[in-house]
Amino acid sequence: MPEQPTVKCPSCESDIRAADESGLVDGLRQHLYEKHGMEMPPERVRENVAAQLRNFDGYNARPISGA
Image 1 (cartoon, helix red, strand yellow):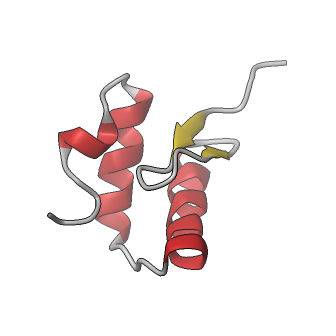
Image 2 (tube, rainbow, N blue to C red):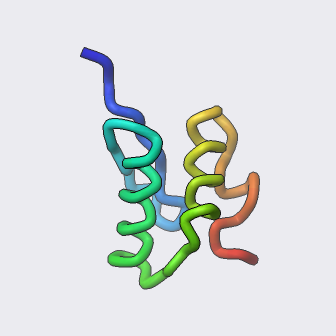
């Protein structure tokens, strides 16, 4: 059975797991909101997830904080 895709929260390095990329986007967005009080547009979170899945440092590719 293949392992679930995983991304890291750019704020706290927590692992977020889901069955597919869409689930990772939803999971990371929910985590950012619940744990860090950050509301991020889905497109920004999707960019971060895509970058991490392609072995880029998603945080440095385009900071999720908007800074």
